[in-house]
Amino acid sequence: MSHKRLFSLLVVGCAAIAIACGSDNSPTGPNRAPLFITNGPDSGSQPAPDTSGPRSTTPRTVTGTVSGIGPAGDTANYSKVAGVSVTIRLPDDSAAHVRGKTVASAVTDANGHFSLGQVAPGGYILEAIPPAGSPFKSTYWGFAIGDWTPNALELGVWLSRLP
Image (cartoon, rainbow, N blue to C red; front, side, top):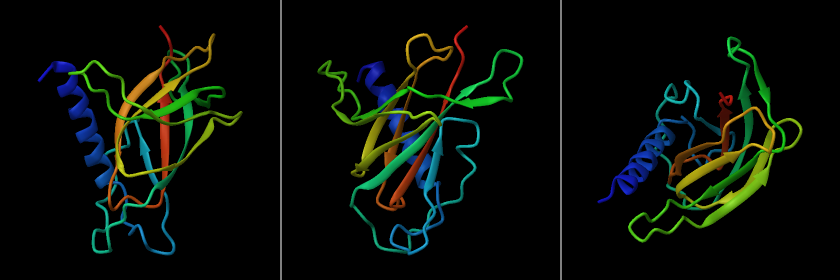
């Protein structure tokens, strides 16, 4: 197995674990809060999911916000980033040298918000590419939507500054 394929599988596997630990609400309960997933430092601090309810393979609503880290020396100040192209796609097939198919894409509004619509359970790669001239770098990371993932999934995407 190539290193790229192994890395892709590792990223998706880690993301699946992060999602599995992301909510204590059943996907079929009436008052579910959205599951919040982030590539920031707080992504591993969520409680385990409630797996006592029935599994659900229906598509989930995926939304989110893109924030940029403040200037050097001021990383505590974050700003919402407009005009970022956010895409989720299937993982690459590195053995066949084929890029994963795009599942959904959107561009962030003035408040950094985006909506990717309904997305079926499975493993995905998120790409967030800032507009030309932006002081931020693109980011890429894996995540998974599982059988017990709530019906609403909110992604928190953080962009680092260019050097």
